[in-house]
Structures are given as C-alpha cells and as structure tokens.
Length: 523
Image (tube, rainbow, N blue to C red):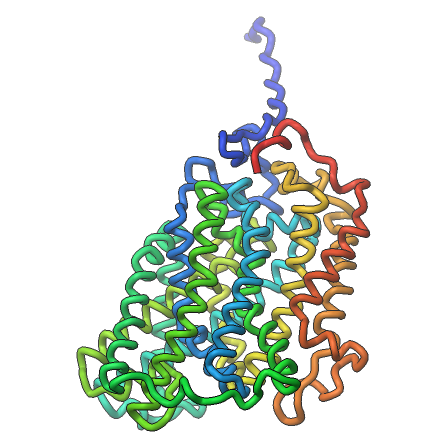
C-alpha cells in the first residue's frame, strides 16, 4: 500500500552566517559558516572558539621567559665574544636584535587573538590556500632543524651531569663516534619532549607557567654560587674588545645582529600559533613586550657575569653552563642543575620548535595529519638531519645557519605584514580562508604576487651568502658576487624588499575586497 502523504522535500542548507565577534574585536566562525572541505580543514586549523581564547599577559610573558632561558640562548653571548666582541658589545647586539624582532612579532601576532587562526592559515590570505604550503614548509623545515639542535644540546647536558653523578658514562663503548650512554640520554630526552607536546596546547600553557619561574630561579642560583666562589666577578668584565668600535667592528656587528634577529625570526612568523589563544590584543602585546627583549637581554648579561665568575674561580672562561655546573662535587647541586637543564630545554623546544611544524604539516594534508601527528613527524625529522653538525663553530652557527634562516624567514615575514596590515588593513574573510573558490583561491590556490615577492626577496637576502675560506659551505666571493654586500643584512633586506614588492604588485585591485559586516571591528 502506497502512502498518500507527499514526501517531505529536503531542507535546503542554511546560508552561511555572519562571523561572530565580541566587544574586544575578536572574531570567530558561526556554526553555519564552518567549512567542511577536508583538503583545507581539520579541527586543529579552524579558528579557536572565542570562549577558548583565554591566554593572559602572564601566559605570554611566561611563554617567552620559558623559551628564552635555554642553553643556546645562553651561548649566544659566548659566540659573539669568540668573534672578538667584548661583553658590552655582545649584550648590546643581543638587546638591539630582540627589540628589532619584537616589531614583526607583534604585527604578525595581531591576527591570532583577532581571528583565532594559526600561521599557515594566515599565510593563505597572501599566498593562497595551496600556496601557503610554501612558507609553511620552509618554517617547518627550520623548526625541525632547531628541534634537533635543542634536543641534542639537552641530551648532552643530561649526559654530562649524570656522568658526573654516576661516573664512567664518558668511557662507555662508542656508537657512531659517541658513547652509547650519550645516545641513550638523547633518545630519552627526545621521547620526553614528544610525550609532553602530544597532550596538546593546554598542557603546554600549564607547563610554561611553572617552567618560567623555575628556570629563572635556577639561573640566579648559578649566579650566586659562582659569585660566592669567585669572591666577585673577574677579569672577563675588564677584557677589552679585539674589534674596538671602529672599522673592524662593523663588518662583524651587522651579520651578528642579523644572526641574533634570526634566532627568533622563526617565531616572528608563527607567533599566531600561540596568540590565537589570546584573551585580547593587550595580552599578547604586553606579554610579548615584557617577555622577549627583557628576558633575552638579562639572560645574555647573566651568562656574561657567570662566565666572568668562572674565569675568576677556575682560571678559564666556561661559557657552557652545563660544563660549569659539572665542576661541582655536590650531588644535590648536580641533580638540581640536571632538572633545570631538562625544564629549560623542554620549555623552549616544544614551544618554539614543535608547535609550528605540527600546524604547518597539518596544513599540508589536513585529512591525514593532525597536530599530534605533525609533532611526531617533527621529532623524527629533527633526528634524521643530524643536528649536532650545525653547531660545530660560531661561524657556521651564527653566520651560515642563522644568517641563511634569517634571510628566508624575513622574506616571508615581509609578505605577511604587507598583506595583513597594508593591503587588507587587518580585515580578513575568515570562512574564505578555508574555502576553495573563495577570495583567497587566486590562480588554482596560488597567489603569484606572493610567490614572486618571495623569490625576489629571497635571492636578494641570501644570494650573496659567503664564507671565509675553510669556515663554511659558501664561496668566499658569494654565491652571487654582486649581492655579497647585502648578505650581511639578510633578514632586513628580505623583509623590506618582499614587503615593498608585494605591495606594489598587489596594488589596490583584486586582493583587498573584504566583507564590511565585521570590517569595522576594533583592531
């Protein structure tokens, strides 16, 4: 028997709703506007809901304190002193670099609290939905390398301190030119980091909140300990610069400044990965301004003072805090230092070098890779690249590695800042950042303007890369000889040239239109 009731017609889909916003100007996607195309969307890439954006000024300041207090940043001053600077020149260079890099950090960080989006999604506005994978994968590759470097340094620190406690570790049988006990420390430390990040961003926030004051206390304890043993601070503070302030200083200063900027240039790109959880713009601006330049400068000064004390006590400057602590015979002191090294290195590594590539790799294949899978891939790649070879000499570490990274990342930063602040005036169509065929689709997902600006800016920034004979991989005359003078200013050249070129190419034609329903929201 057939029913005489006519079938109910299918309910038409609801039209996309306007984005939701709050009085502070933060914007989110309404339920009806959430895109579903799994080529460009997964849960980790969608905007953070407004109610979950609750990081405060303290959270951001603690994040930076936790990231800045680590062994590589402690060793920055020693690298500059090894190149001929005195301690005042080294601390000045580090302070200036971090004041400079704070600018793009705050500019790119603005999109985080406002839209709740991570770096690779922000990059879609300028590079296109598919083109955003270009800067994202460059950033991910750099982060993987940094993850490996920090993990290796942390593993060496654990190996050194445990060897002092138990003895005999350094004489264990070798594998690949290193004692097997060192490889064991490296692997265990690597596993610990991945276990923490696997628990997600809330676990990271809680870890940073207590890690920051713990590491500060540890550094101050080290300073007090060496000052008491030295009876004051020794000859290092009176050591004159081998460069002076004349013509020998500036050729070392500018590439060193770019290298110090490059140390955090990575975060100047992907800082939206963190600020997307911010309670508002004031929280991220105040927290970052309080946390980054002050902490890095004080940490550099602290490393100089402690090293000066070590020279007075032991007759030699011991820049590595792990090697310095290993001179004590106190088991309690060694174990305390071991925990401090663990906390400090984990704090920076999972925040600075795992979060970004986890999102970047998720952006590459959202259907297959989520945040946790991306973190695991990062951990594997960070080991495969053999990071222990990148920190062999100050020249290789500061000029080659940091200089090259800074030039490329400065170029990407210039494009992001130009697009978000100059071309779009901070107004984005949030739903279209996830929608093929929308305003950020450009030519099959790629914006040729951004790609061209990146190519030109990148060549100008790193095309003249050069190495002194026997100290690096580049020819002494530069890869492209006539660009050699620019290479000492790679980060600045890349940022400025790509910014200007992108603005010129974009004009005011087809990339600026954006909905006005929320365009007037408070910035």
